[in-house]
Image (cartoon, rainbow, N blue to C red):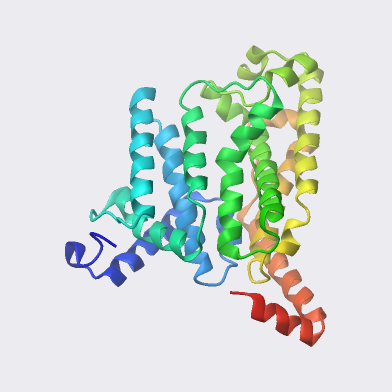
Length: 322
C-alpha cells in the first residue's frame, strides 16, 4: 500500500496497530450505546468494527460539528473525504499522521479483510450531505432512503465483518434493522435536532396528526403530538419485527453483539413509548449499568444456545465461522 511503510519512522505494522488503537479510543469515547455491544466481539472483528464506527463518526462530524463552517465548506470537506475514501480503497493509504489521518490504515485493513462493498461508504457520505441544509421529508419513502444512508449502510457493513449467510436477503434484514435503530434515534433526539432546525418526521405524518413544524421546533406537546409519536413508535416497532430473523443469520461469535446493540436501542424506544412527551424536554438514555447487564445477558444467552445444540451441529457451526 503506497505511502504506508516507514512513514514518520513507524513500520507498517506499527502504523496499523496505532490506527486501530486510535479507533478504539474514538469508539469508547463517542459510541455511548454501540461500545457495550462491540466489546463482545472476538478479535479481529472487534477492532474492525471500531474502525468502521470511527470512519462513520468522522464523516458525521464533518457534517454536524458546530465550529462555524458554512454548508459550502462542509460540502467541500465531504467531497474531499469521498475522494480520500476512494483512494484508500484503491490501496493508497495516506502518509500523514495525527488527527483524522490516523483512521485510514485501520479503515483500509477492515474494508479489504472483510470485503465491505465500496458503495456503502458513498451512500453513507450522501446521507451526511443531506444534513447540510435544514432537513425535511415529504413522506416516509424519503425518510426511509435517508435512514438507509445513515444507518442501513452501517448495518450491511457490519454483517460483512461479522460473517453471515443468505446474501441479499440478509442484507435487506440488516437494512431494516438499521432503519429501526435510526427511527429510534430520531424520536429520542427530537428536541436536539429541532434546535438545529431539523425535523426528520415526514410532513405527511405531521399533517395527519395535526402537528405543525412550529409545534415540533417549539417543543409543544399535547394529544396531537402524542398521537404523532404513537404512530412513529409503531413504525419503528414494525422494522424491529421485520428484521427479527437477522440474529440467526450472522455468525455465532458475533450474535451477542447484534443482540446487545439491538436491545439497548429497543429499550430506548420503549422508554420513549412510556412517556412520549419527555423527548421534548430531555434526551432519553440508559445507565451504563443497564447496558452492561444487557451485554452480559446477550453473551450468556448466546453461549447457552450454542451449548444446547447437538455436538455435531456445534462442530459444523464452528467450521463455518471465519
